[in-house]
Amino acid sequence: MEQQVTSIIGHLAKSHMEMAKIIESKRHIIVQMASIMDEIPDYPSFCELQQMTQSSVLVVDSVTSYLNSIADLEEAIAENLTSVMQELSTDSEEE
Image (cartoon, rainbow, N blue to C red; front, side, top):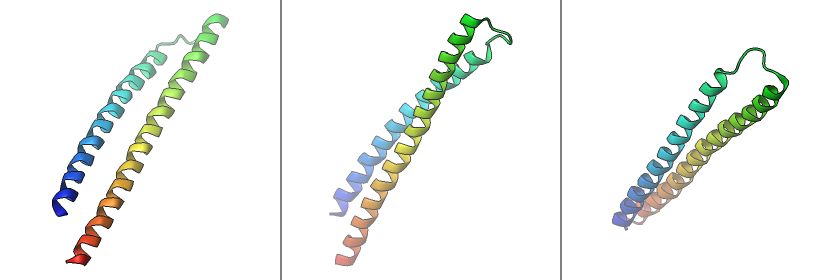
């Protein structure tokens, strides 16, 4: 049983690592989008103002998505560790 728990922990660790890599790539995209937003002129025309607003909404949506991804990863890790710790505690009680 302990071998199975160890195997599950290994698979969960790999899964969490892959999720972290995806989130990291999202972070790079958001940083690039934010740096593009930094290049906006100080006094835009009306057409540019609409485009800026749309771009700003996209950046905010991306940042929100990124933060939600981090929260989801944290929640998944917590749930998995809770399950593993419960399994380990029941195994130690059985011995």
